[in-house]
Image (cartoon, rainbow, N blue to C red):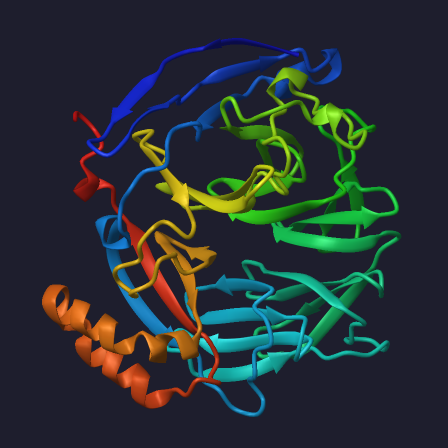
Length: 409
């Protein structure tokens, strides 16, 4: 594999930091004669080699809204393993406490639980992942049960499909087709149809490639696939897997083939970069909408291991990143950002624990009084409705780099 060229560069400057953001449109070739027509694709390069940027959350937030999730004896969230939002509902997969999918409306009112543990039809041994398709069916993978289950959005069981593999992650594509990955025994990416057919999908017709430690997320134009020790973000469509983004970690990198005997990425081994001495996932969490990309990554040294995050504007190529614990969150009066756990339309979704909301309320109230007084009544409503043990609050935010004035400075 060889990268022919990088077509253009964009230099972004800031008073606080000067760094290079390379937005590369790179032609990938050398995929083999059988699939050469499908393998010529473009990558957008996201460079995070710069000095971290100093900024506050309010400088990049364009809009914000709060949804307090109702708490009752049937809706006690142990963990938010996965969060999905549709035009009518919020779906939360909790495989720690309830071992089910909890459904809320967009105002946070609890509606129902979907599924429960068991070995019979419509039951799962351990729920691993979920997606919601265009029929509003909730589709769930049962790893140990080796099956994929279908429910309607009222919680009624529809059907289940048995698999020959242990289904792990799942994402809805289109045309009644789903991406289902299998960690064991074969590490393959499978296209599962609504009728129950399951076909493996290979990277550039390379059956030797295996996806052993990975995640799926909904992206613009398909399903995004990320995997352990790989800096390339792939897009999965109904009939192909193609490279989509390249995360360039600059000088803090080494080839993946030096680690643990992992196979070399089929694009180009010279582009397989990880941060020496400790990057755990590259990236850890990857969320994309039409305008922005957000992801985390660990940077480690002999003395320290820090979680960093990057926010990237797809259209302009602007990029900022910083250490998680160094970015002052002035909106919520903390020295770290709230964790981003999902994306919906132009909104990224943050998780705000109720006890933290109550602890920070006075400082938050003072900030909003001075800067965003129209939010005060909503903050007061939430405070009255929760306790320290209540379910988390979801914070929907949209980003805008305008106030940072990164361009032309």
